Length: 206
Length: 331
Image (cartoon, rainbow over all chains, first blue to last red; front, side):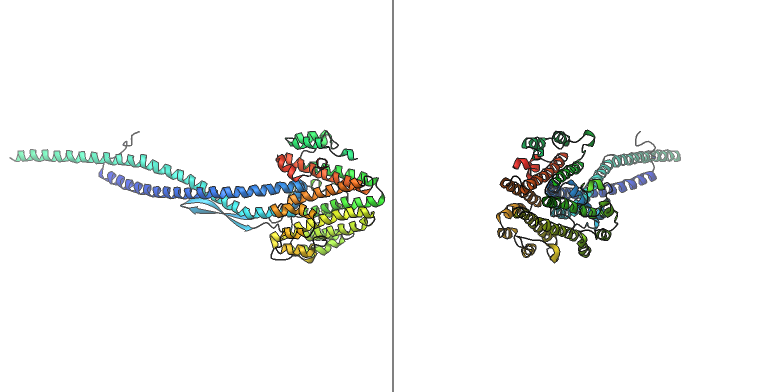
Protein backbone atom coordinates (compact mmCIF):
# COMPACT_ATOMS: atom_id res chain seq x y z
CA UNK A 1 0.00 0.00 0.00
CA UNK A 2 1.37 3.36 -0.99
CA UNK A 3 2.27 5.88 1.72
CA UNK A 4 0.18 8.39 -0.18
CA UNK A 5 -3.09 6.51 0.16
CA UNK A 6 -5.49 8.33 2.43
CA UNK A 7 -3.45 11.56 2.26
CA UNK A 8 -5.56 14.70 2.27
CA UNK A 9 -3.79 17.39 0.20
CA UNK A 10 -4.88 20.29 2.36
CA UNK A 11 -2.97 23.15 3.91
CA UNK A 12 -3.95 22.00 7.42
CA UNK A 13 -2.78 18.47 6.76
CA UNK A 14 0.52 19.77 5.34
CA UNK A 15 1.17 21.82 8.47
CA UNK A 16 0.33 18.81 10.63
CA UNK A 17 2.72 16.61 8.60
CA UNK A 18 5.52 19.20 8.77
CA UNK A 19 5.08 19.47 12.53
CA UNK A 20 5.24 15.71 12.86
CA UNK A 21 8.33 15.41 10.64
CA UNK A 22 10.16 18.06 12.62
CA UNK A 23 9.30 16.20 15.85
CA UNK A 24 10.51 12.90 14.37
CA UNK A 25 13.73 14.47 13.12
CA UNK A 26 14.41 15.90 16.56
CA UNK A 27 13.68 12.48 18.12
CA UNK A 28 16.01 10.86 15.62
CA UNK A 29 18.80 13.27 16.57
CA UNK A 30 18.31 12.38 20.25
CA UNK A 31 18.35 8.69 19.43
CA UNK A 32 21.58 9.18 17.47
CA UNK A 33 23.11 10.90 20.49
CA UNK A 34 21.92 8.04 22.71
CA UNK A 35 23.33 5.50 20.26
CA UNK A 36 26.73 7.18 20.23
CA UNK A 37 26.79 7.40 24.01
CA UNK A 38 25.80 3.75 24.41
CA UNK A 39 28.41 2.67 21.87
CA UNK A 40 31.07 4.61 23.75
CA UNK A 41 29.88 3.10 27.05
CA UNK A 42 29.96 -0.40 25.56
CA UNK A 43 33.47 -0.01 24.13
CA UNK A 44 34.82 1.12 27.50
CA UNK A 45 32.90 -1.66 29.30
CA UNK A 46 34.22 -4.36 26.99
CA UNK A 47 37.81 -3.23 27.49
CA UNK A 48 37.41 -3.20 31.29
CA UNK A 49 35.49 -6.48 31.20
CA UNK A 50 38.18 -8.25 29.21
CA UNK A 51 40.89 -7.16 31.66
CA UNK A 52 38.85 -8.01 34.77
CA UNK A 53 37.75 -11.37 33.43
CA UNK A 54 41.32 -12.45 32.77
CA UNK A 55 42.43 -11.42 36.26
CA UNK A 56 39.47 -13.13 37.95
CA UNK A 57 39.86 -16.29 35.85
CA UNK A 58 43.47 -16.45 36.92
CA UNK A 59 42.54 -16.07 40.59
CA UNK A 60 39.66 -18.56 40.33
CA UNK A 61 42.03 -21.09 38.81
CA UNK A 62 44.31 -20.60 41.80
CA UNK A 63 41.38 -21.13 44.22
CA UNK A 64 40.27 -24.22 42.32
CA UNK A 65 43.78 -25.67 42.50
CA UNK A 66 43.85 -25.03 46.25
CA UNK A 67 40.46 -26.74 46.74
CA UNK A 68 41.57 -29.74 44.70
CA UNK A 69 44.72 -30.17 46.76
CA UNK A 70 42.75 -29.80 50.01
CA UNK A 71 40.35 -32.54 48.83
CA UNK A 72 43.27 -34.79 47.89
CA UNK A 73 44.99 -34.39 51.23
CA UNK A 74 42.04 -34.15 53.65
CA UNK A 75 39.56 -36.40 51.84
CA UNK A 76 36.08 -35.48 50.57
CA UNK A 77 34.17 -36.16 53.79
CA UNK A 78 36.51 -34.05 55.94
CA UNK A 79 36.39 -31.15 53.48
CA UNK A 80 32.61 -31.37 53.35
CA UNK A 81 32.38 -31.53 57.12
CA UNK A 82 34.64 -28.51 57.54
CA UNK A 83 32.89 -26.43 54.94
CA UNK A 84 29.51 -27.23 56.46
CA UNK A 85 30.63 -25.44 59.62
CA UNK A 86 30.84 -22.10 57.84
CA UNK A 87 27.88 -20.10 59.05
CA UNK A 88 26.24 -16.94 57.78
CA UNK A 89 27.05 -17.21 54.11
CA UNK A 90 27.28 -14.09 51.97
CA UNK A 91 24.10 -12.03 51.92
CA UNK A 92 23.67 -9.72 48.98
CA UNK A 93 21.08 -7.21 47.87
CA UNK A 94 20.25 -6.66 44.21
CA UNK A 95 18.78 -3.28 43.27
CA UNK A 96 18.16 -1.75 39.84
CA UNK A 97 20.36 1.11 38.58
CA UNK A 98 20.15 2.98 35.30
CA UNK A 99 22.54 4.33 32.66
CA UNK A 100 20.94 6.31 29.75
CA UNK A 101 17.63 4.73 30.71
CA UNK A 102 19.07 1.20 30.60
CA UNK A 103 18.30 -0.63 33.84
CA UNK A 104 20.84 -3.11 35.19
CA UNK A 105 21.18 -4.95 38.53
CA UNK A 106 23.44 -3.36 41.10
CA UNK A 107 24.77 -5.75 43.79
CA UNK A 108 25.66 -4.69 47.29
CA UNK A 109 27.08 -7.02 49.97
CA UNK A 110 25.07 -6.94 53.20
CA UNK A 111 27.11 -9.45 55.21
CA UNK A 112 30.10 -11.68 54.64
CA UNK A 113 30.63 -15.36 55.54
CA UNK A 114 32.48 -16.03 58.78
CA UNK A 115 35.26 -18.50 58.10
CA UNK A 116 37.83 -17.37 60.63
CA UNK A 117 38.98 -20.08 62.98
CA UNK A 118 36.62 -22.70 61.64
CA UNK A 119 38.65 -24.37 58.94
CA UNK A 120 41.76 -26.44 58.54
CA UNK A 121 44.77 -24.32 57.42
CA UNK A 122 44.59 -25.77 53.89
CA UNK A 123 40.92 -24.83 53.52
CA UNK A 124 41.32 -21.63 55.46
CA UNK A 125 43.80 -20.37 52.87
CA UNK A 126 41.40 -21.30 50.08
CA UNK A 127 38.55 -19.55 51.89
CA UNK A 128 40.65 -16.40 52.33
CA UNK A 129 41.54 -16.40 48.63
CA UNK A 130 37.90 -16.94 47.69
CA UNK A 131 36.74 -14.18 50.03
CA UNK A 132 39.26 -11.86 48.37
CA UNK A 133 37.88 -12.44 44.90
CA UNK A 134 34.22 -13.10 45.71
CA UNK A 135 33.31 -9.43 45.68
CA UNK A 136 35.30 -8.97 42.47
CA UNK A 137 33.23 -11.79 40.96
CA UNK A 138 30.04 -9.99 42.06
CA UNK A 139 31.29 -6.71 40.54
CA UNK A 140 32.15 -8.58 37.35
CA UNK A 141 28.68 -10.14 37.20
CA UNK A 142 27.16 -6.68 37.69
CA UNK A 143 29.41 -5.24 35.00
CA UNK A 144 28.63 -8.06 32.58
CA UNK A 145 24.89 -7.64 33.08
CA UNK A 146 25.31 -3.91 32.51
CA UNK A 147 27.38 -4.42 29.34
CA UNK A 148 24.88 -7.00 28.07
CA UNK A 149 21.93 -4.69 28.60
CA UNK A 150 23.75 -1.68 27.14
CA UNK A 151 24.58 -3.79 24.06
CA UNK A 152 20.96 -4.89 23.81
CA UNK A 153 19.72 -1.30 24.10
CA UNK A 154 22.34 -0.17 21.57
CA UNK A 155 20.98 -2.70 19.09
CA UNK A 156 17.41 -1.51 19.66
CA UNK A 157 18.39 2.17 19.38
CA UNK A 158 20.31 1.49 16.20
CA UNK A 159 17.29 -0.24 14.68
CA UNK A 160 15.06 2.70 15.68
CA UNK A 161 17.46 5.24 14.15
CA UNK A 162 17.71 3.21 10.94
CA UNK A 163 13.93 2.86 10.75
CA UNK A 164 13.45 6.58 11.26
CA UNK A 165 16.20 7.61 8.83
CA UNK A 166 15.41 5.12 6.10
CA UNK A 167 11.65 4.59 6.34
CA UNK A 168 9.69 7.00 8.50
CA UNK A 169 11.39 10.31 7.62
CA UNK A 170 11.53 9.59 3.81
CA UNK A 171 7.86 8.58 3.79
CA UNK A 172 6.84 11.75 5.67
CA UNK A 173 9.00 13.80 3.30
CA UNK A 174 7.32 12.08 0.38
CA UNK A 175 3.86 12.87 1.76
CA UNK A 176 4.82 16.48 2.42
CA UNK A 177 6.27 16.84 -1.05
CA UNK A 178 3.15 15.26 -2.53
CA UNK A 179 0.86 17.65 -0.63
CA UNK A 180 3.05 20.64 -1.50
CA UNK A 181 3.04 19.65 -5.18
CA UNK A 182 -0.68 19.11 -5.04
CA UNK A 183 -1.26 22.46 -3.33
CA UNK A 184 1.10 24.23 -5.78
CA UNK A 185 -0.77 22.64 -8.67
CA UNK A 186 -4.10 23.67 -7.19
CA UNK A 187 -2.92 27.22 -6.56
CA UNK A 188 -1.60 27.41 -10.16
CA UNK A 189 -4.93 26.14 -11.45
CA UNK A 190 -6.65 28.68 -9.25
CA UNK A 191 -4.46 31.45 -10.62
CA UNK A 192 -5.11 30.43 -14.21
CA UNK A 193 -8.80 30.12 -13.49
CA UNK A 194 -8.83 33.57 -11.86
CA UNK A 195 -6.96 35.03 -14.84
CA UNK A 196 -9.34 33.40 -17.31
CA UNK A 197 -12.41 34.50 -15.38
CA UNK A 198 -10.90 37.98 -14.95
CA UNK A 199 -10.22 38.16 -18.73
CA UNK A 200 -13.74 36.93 -19.62
CA UNK A 201 -15.32 39.42 -17.21
CA UNK A 202 -13.28 42.29 -18.70
CA UNK A 203 -14.26 41.29 -22.21
CA UNK A 204 -17.95 41.22 -21.20
CA UNK A 205 -17.69 44.71 -19.66
CA UNK A 206 -16.22 46.05 -22.90
CA UNK B 1 48.51 -59.39 56.43
CA UNK B 2 51.23 -57.46 54.64
CA UNK B 3 50.13 -59.36 51.52
CA UNK B 4 46.86 -57.41 51.63
CA UNK B 5 48.76 -54.22 50.75
CA UNK B 6 48.48 -53.31 47.08
CA UNK B 7 51.57 -53.86 44.97
CA UNK B 8 53.11 -51.17 42.71
CA UNK B 9 51.68 -52.75 39.53
CA UNK B 10 48.11 -52.44 40.88
CA UNK B 11 48.73 -48.86 41.96
CA UNK B 12 50.05 -48.10 38.47
CA UNK B 13 46.85 -49.48 36.92
CA UNK B 14 44.73 -47.52 39.42
CA UNK B 15 46.58 -44.29 38.67
CA UNK B 16 46.19 -44.86 34.92
CA UNK B 17 42.42 -45.47 35.12
CA UNK B 18 40.60 -42.97 32.91
CA UNK B 19 37.33 -42.79 34.84
CA UNK B 20 35.96 -43.48 38.31
CA UNK B 21 34.14 -46.58 36.98
CA UNK B 22 37.35 -47.94 35.50
CA UNK B 23 39.13 -47.19 38.78
CA UNK B 24 36.47 -49.09 40.73
CA UNK B 25 36.74 -52.04 38.31
CA UNK B 26 40.47 -52.29 39.03
CA UNK B 27 39.94 -51.85 42.78
CA UNK B 28 37.38 -54.65 42.68
CA UNK B 29 40.10 -57.08 41.62
CA UNK B 30 42.14 -56.34 44.79
CA UNK B 31 41.75 -56.99 48.53
CA UNK B 32 39.29 -54.05 48.49
CA UNK B 33 36.74 -55.94 46.36
CA UNK B 34 33.08 -55.22 47.06
CA UNK B 35 29.89 -56.97 45.99
CA UNK B 36 28.20 -55.49 42.93
CA UNK B 37 25.21 -54.22 44.97
CA UNK B 38 27.40 -52.63 47.67
CA UNK B 39 29.80 -51.01 45.23
CA UNK B 40 30.43 -47.37 46.22
CA UNK B 41 28.87 -45.13 43.59
CA UNK B 42 30.68 -41.94 44.62
CA UNK B 43 34.09 -41.00 46.03
CA UNK B 44 32.35 -40.06 49.28
CA UNK B 45 30.86 -43.55 49.59
CA UNK B 46 34.22 -45.04 48.62
CA UNK B 47 35.86 -43.15 51.47
CA UNK B 48 33.32 -44.62 53.93
CA UNK B 49 33.94 -48.11 52.56
CA UNK B 50 37.75 -47.76 52.74
CA UNK B 51 37.46 -46.48 56.31
CA UNK B 52 35.42 -49.59 57.17
CA UNK B 53 38.09 -51.86 55.66
CA UNK B 54 40.85 -50.02 57.53
CA UNK B 55 39.00 -50.21 60.85
CA UNK B 56 38.28 -53.93 60.35
CA UNK B 57 41.98 -54.58 59.65
CA UNK B 58 42.96 -52.49 62.67
CA UNK B 59 40.55 -54.42 64.94
CA UNK B 60 41.95 -57.69 63.61
CA UNK B 61 45.54 -56.65 64.38
CA UNK B 62 44.52 -55.28 67.78
CA UNK B 63 42.82 -58.59 68.62
CA UNK B 64 46.00 -60.62 68.27
CA UNK B 65 48.50 -58.04 69.56
CA UNK B 66 49.89 -58.16 73.11
CA UNK B 67 47.76 -56.17 75.58
CA UNK B 68 50.11 -53.15 75.95
CA UNK B 69 50.55 -52.81 72.17
CA UNK B 70 46.83 -53.35 71.52
CA UNK B 71 45.97 -50.57 73.98
CA UNK B 72 48.41 -48.19 72.29
CA UNK B 73 47.08 -49.01 68.79
CA UNK B 74 43.51 -48.37 69.90
CA UNK B 75 44.50 -44.95 71.24
CA UNK B 76 46.82 -44.00 68.39
CA UNK B 77 44.49 -44.95 65.55
CA UNK B 78 40.92 -45.30 66.85
CA UNK B 79 40.90 -42.42 69.32
CA UNK B 80 42.08 -40.05 66.59
CA UNK B 81 39.23 -41.20 64.36
CA UNK B 82 36.83 -40.74 67.28
CA UNK B 83 38.07 -37.17 67.81
CA UNK B 84 37.59 -36.51 64.10
CA UNK B 85 34.02 -37.78 64.47
CA UNK B 86 33.38 -35.58 67.50
CA UNK B 87 34.51 -32.53 65.55
CA UNK B 88 32.28 -33.54 62.66
CA UNK B 89 29.32 -33.80 65.05
CA UNK B 90 30.02 -30.27 66.32
CA UNK B 91 30.20 -29.01 62.74
CA UNK B 92 26.93 -30.75 61.86
CA UNK B 93 25.22 -28.32 64.29
CA UNK B 94 26.02 -25.60 61.76
CA UNK B 95 25.21 -27.52 58.61
CA UNK B 96 22.05 -26.46 56.80
CA UNK B 97 22.68 -29.24 54.28
CA UNK B 98 20.11 -31.96 54.97
CA UNK B 99 21.67 -34.23 52.33
CA UNK B 100 24.82 -34.37 54.43
CA UNK B 101 23.68 -37.32 56.49
CA UNK B 102 25.21 -38.91 59.52
CA UNK B 103 26.08 -42.06 57.52
CA UNK B 104 28.26 -40.08 55.16
CA UNK B 105 29.47 -37.49 57.63
CA UNK B 106 30.86 -39.79 60.30
CA UNK B 107 33.72 -42.26 60.09
CA UNK B 108 32.22 -45.73 60.71
CA UNK B 109 34.00 -46.35 64.01
CA UNK B 110 32.30 -47.31 67.27
CA UNK B 111 32.79 -44.83 70.14
CA UNK B 112 35.89 -45.67 72.16
CA UNK B 113 35.64 -43.23 75.07
CA UNK B 114 32.78 -41.06 73.92
CA UNK B 115 29.09 -41.67 74.55
CA UNK B 116 27.14 -43.03 71.52
CA UNK B 117 27.28 -40.60 68.62
CA UNK B 118 23.50 -40.71 68.25
CA UNK B 119 23.08 -39.08 71.66
CA UNK B 120 25.63 -36.40 70.80
CA UNK B 121 23.88 -35.72 67.52
CA UNK B 122 20.60 -35.22 69.40
CA UNK B 123 22.07 -32.26 71.30
CA UNK B 124 20.69 -29.07 69.82
CA UNK B 125 23.53 -26.79 70.93
CA UNK B 126 27.28 -26.87 71.44
CA UNK B 127 26.66 -26.38 75.18
CA UNK B 128 24.53 -29.55 75.13
CA UNK B 129 27.27 -31.38 73.23
CA UNK B 130 29.91 -30.36 75.79
CA UNK B 131 27.60 -31.28 78.68
CA UNK B 132 26.94 -34.71 77.16
CA UNK B 133 30.70 -35.35 77.09
CA UNK B 134 31.00 -34.52 80.82
CA UNK B 135 31.11 -38.18 82.01
CA UNK B 136 33.79 -39.13 79.44
CA UNK B 137 37.55 -38.52 79.17
CA UNK B 138 36.67 -35.50 77.03
CA UNK B 139 35.19 -33.61 80.01
CA UNK B 140 37.87 -30.87 79.73
CA UNK B 141 36.32 -29.74 76.44
CA UNK B 142 34.05 -27.54 78.59
CA UNK B 143 37.13 -25.40 79.33
CA UNK B 144 37.21 -24.44 75.67
CA UNK B 145 33.55 -23.46 75.48
CA UNK B 146 33.96 -19.85 76.62
CA UNK B 147 36.89 -19.36 74.29
CA UNK B 148 34.88 -20.87 71.43
CA UNK B 149 32.12 -18.34 72.10
CA UNK B 150 34.56 -15.48 72.55
CA UNK B 151 36.35 -16.19 69.24
CA UNK B 152 33.22 -17.49 67.51
CA UNK B 153 35.33 -20.48 66.44
CA UNK B 154 35.49 -24.22 66.88
CA UNK B 155 39.25 -24.58 67.27
CA UNK B 156 39.19 -24.26 71.11
CA UNK B 157 37.06 -27.42 71.27
CA UNK B 158 39.43 -29.17 68.89
CA UNK B 159 42.42 -28.10 71.01
CA UNK B 160 40.87 -29.68 74.13
CA UNK B 161 39.83 -32.85 72.28
CA UNK B 162 43.39 -33.22 70.98
CA UNK B 163 44.73 -32.57 74.49
CA UNK B 164 42.67 -35.53 75.72
CA UNK B 165 44.38 -37.61 73.02
CA UNK B 166 47.85 -36.43 74.09
CA UNK B 167 47.15 -37.21 77.77
CA UNK B 168 45.82 -40.66 76.95
CA UNK B 169 48.59 -41.40 74.43
CA UNK B 170 51.31 -40.40 76.93
CA UNK B 171 49.80 -42.89 79.37
CA UNK B 172 49.79 -45.84 76.99
CA UNK B 173 53.16 -45.01 75.44
CA UNK B 174 54.79 -45.50 78.82
CA UNK B 175 53.65 -49.14 78.63
CA UNK B 176 55.73 -49.74 75.47
CA UNK B 177 59.39 -50.80 75.33
CA UNK B 178 61.84 -47.91 75.39
CA UNK B 179 62.87 -48.40 71.73
CA UNK B 180 59.19 -48.47 70.68
CA UNK B 181 58.50 -45.36 72.73
CA UNK B 182 61.17 -43.52 70.72
CA UNK B 183 59.41 -44.39 67.45
CA UNK B 184 55.98 -43.25 68.61
CA UNK B 185 57.25 -40.09 70.31
CA UNK B 186 59.20 -39.10 67.21
CA UNK B 187 56.07 -39.37 65.09
CA UNK B 188 53.84 -37.61 67.62
CA UNK B 189 56.33 -34.78 68.08
CA UNK B 190 56.78 -34.24 64.35
CA UNK B 191 53.03 -34.34 63.65
CA UNK B 192 52.23 -31.96 66.51
CA UNK B 193 55.00 -29.50 65.61
CA UNK B 194 54.07 -29.40 61.92
CA UNK B 195 50.38 -28.90 62.73
CA UNK B 196 51.35 -26.12 65.19
CA UNK B 197 53.38 -24.37 62.50
CA UNK B 198 50.49 -24.60 60.03
CA UNK B 199 48.04 -23.30 62.66
CA UNK B 200 50.41 -20.41 63.48
CA UNK B 201 50.77 -19.46 59.82
CA UNK B 202 47.04 -19.70 59.33
CA UNK B 203 46.53 -17.39 62.33
CA UNK B 204 49.11 -14.98 60.92
CA UNK B 205 47.32 -14.87 57.58
CA UNK B 206 44.00 -13.86 59.14
CA UNK B 207 44.57 -12.30 62.55
CA UNK B 208 48.08 -10.92 62.53
CA UNK B 209 47.14 -7.94 64.68
CA UNK B 210 46.28 -10.04 67.74
CA UNK B 211 48.01 -12.98 69.36
CA UNK B 212 46.27 -16.29 70.05
CA UNK B 213 45.40 -17.17 73.67
CA UNK B 214 48.01 -19.16 75.65
CA UNK B 215 46.02 -22.40 75.24
CA UNK B 216 46.33 -22.26 71.46
CA UNK B 217 49.47 -24.44 71.44
CA UNK B 218 49.05 -26.76 74.46
CA UNK B 219 51.65 -29.20 73.14
CA UNK B 220 54.79 -28.08 71.33
CA UNK B 221 58.13 -29.87 71.11
CA UNK B 222 61.00 -28.90 68.82
CA UNK B 223 59.29 -25.74 67.57
CA UNK B 224 58.67 -23.99 70.88
CA UNK B 225 55.58 -21.90 71.72
CA UNK B 226 57.86 -18.85 71.74
CA UNK B 227 58.98 -19.59 68.16
CA UNK B 228 55.36 -20.12 67.13
CA UNK B 229 54.46 -16.70 68.54
CA UNK B 230 57.42 -15.20 66.65
CA UNK B 231 56.08 -16.86 63.53
CA UNK B 232 52.68 -15.24 64.06
CA UNK B 233 54.38 -11.90 64.62
CA UNK B 234 56.04 -12.17 61.21
CA UNK B 235 59.28 -14.13 61.66
CA UNK B 236 60.45 -16.10 58.65
CA UNK B 237 59.50 -19.78 58.62
CA UNK B 238 62.82 -20.63 56.95
CA UNK B 239 64.72 -19.04 59.86
CA UNK B 240 62.69 -20.97 62.42
CA UNK B 241 62.95 -24.38 60.73
CA UNK B 242 66.69 -23.85 60.35
CA UNK B 243 66.99 -24.00 64.13
CA UNK B 244 65.11 -27.33 64.32
CA UNK B 245 66.29 -30.21 62.13
CA UNK B 246 66.63 -31.41 58.57
CA UNK B 247 63.37 -33.40 58.68
CA UNK B 248 61.32 -30.31 59.52
CA UNK B 249 63.08 -28.32 56.81
CA UNK B 250 62.15 -31.00 54.26
CA UNK B 251 58.53 -31.33 55.40
CA UNK B 252 57.90 -27.59 55.63
CA UNK B 253 59.81 -26.65 52.47
CA UNK B 254 56.65 -26.23 50.31
CA UNK B 255 55.32 -23.73 52.86
CA UNK B 256 58.51 -21.65 52.64
CA UNK B 257 58.75 -21.75 48.87
CA UNK B 258 55.18 -22.10 47.61
CA UNK B 259 52.90 -21.41 50.60
CA UNK B 260 51.41 -24.86 49.88
CA UNK B 261 49.75 -26.29 53.03
CA UNK B 262 48.54 -29.44 51.27
CA UNK B 263 52.01 -30.37 50.10
CA UNK B 264 53.27 -29.98 53.67
CA UNK B 265 50.58 -32.44 54.82
CA UNK B 266 51.58 -34.82 52.05
CA UNK B 267 55.26 -34.57 53.05
CA UNK B 268 54.34 -35.22 56.68
CA UNK B 269 52.39 -38.33 55.70
CA UNK B 270 55.30 -39.55 53.59
CA UNK B 271 57.72 -38.91 56.44
CA UNK B 272 55.58 -40.89 58.92
CA UNK B 273 55.27 -43.76 56.45
CA UNK B 274 58.99 -43.82 55.65
CA UNK B 275 59.99 -43.49 59.31
CA UNK B 276 57.73 -46.40 60.32
CA UNK B 277 59.12 -48.49 57.46
CA UNK B 278 62.69 -47.65 58.44
CA UNK B 279 62.01 -48.75 62.01
CA UNK B 280 60.48 -52.00 60.71
CA UNK B 281 63.67 -52.88 58.87
CA UNK B 282 65.47 -52.74 62.20
CA UNK B 283 62.98 -55.06 63.93
CA UNK B 284 60.74 -57.08 61.65
CA UNK B 285 58.85 -58.97 64.38
CA UNK B 286 57.89 -56.76 67.30
CA UNK B 287 56.02 -53.49 67.69
CA UNK B 288 57.69 -51.70 64.71
CA UNK B 289 56.37 -54.38 62.38
CA UNK B 290 52.77 -54.07 63.60
CA UNK B 291 52.96 -50.27 63.74
CA UNK B 292 54.42 -49.89 60.25
CA UNK B 293 51.80 -52.28 58.85
CA UNK B 294 49.01 -50.13 60.26
CA UNK B 295 50.67 -46.93 59.07
CA UNK B 296 50.92 -48.55 55.60
CA UNK B 297 47.23 -49.53 55.67
CA UNK B 298 46.26 -46.00 56.72
CA UNK B 299 48.48 -44.37 54.08
CA UNK B 300 47.14 -46.74 51.43
CA UNK B 301 43.56 -45.96 52.46
CA UNK B 302 44.20 -42.21 52.19
CA UNK B 303 45.87 -42.70 48.79
CA UNK B 304 42.93 -44.73 47.47
CA UNK B 305 40.44 -42.10 48.70
CA UNK B 306 42.43 -39.34 46.99
CA UNK B 307 42.78 -41.30 43.74
CA UNK B 308 39.06 -42.22 43.77
CA UNK B 309 38.05 -38.59 44.25
CA UNK B 310 40.59 -37.50 41.64
CA UNK B 311 39.21 -39.98 39.10
CA UNK B 312 35.64 -38.90 39.84
CA UNK B 313 36.60 -35.25 39.31
CA UNK B 314 38.93 -36.07 36.39
CA UNK B 315 41.95 -34.47 38.03
CA UNK B 316 45.20 -34.84 36.08
CA UNK B 317 47.42 -37.81 36.98
CA UNK B 318 50.35 -35.46 37.50
CA UNK B 319 48.46 -33.54 40.19
CA UNK B 320 47.18 -36.74 41.83
CA UNK B 321 50.70 -38.12 42.13
CA UNK B 322 52.06 -34.84 43.46
CA UNK B 323 49.68 -34.84 46.44
CA UNK B 324 49.31 -38.56 47.16
CA UNK B 325 51.62 -40.90 49.01
CA UNK B 326 51.54 -44.31 47.33
CA UNK B 327 52.97 -46.65 49.99
CA UNK B 328 54.14 -49.68 48.01
CA UNK B 329 55.50 -47.48 45.23
CA UNK B 330 57.64 -45.57 47.75
CA UNK B 331 58.63 -48.75 49.61
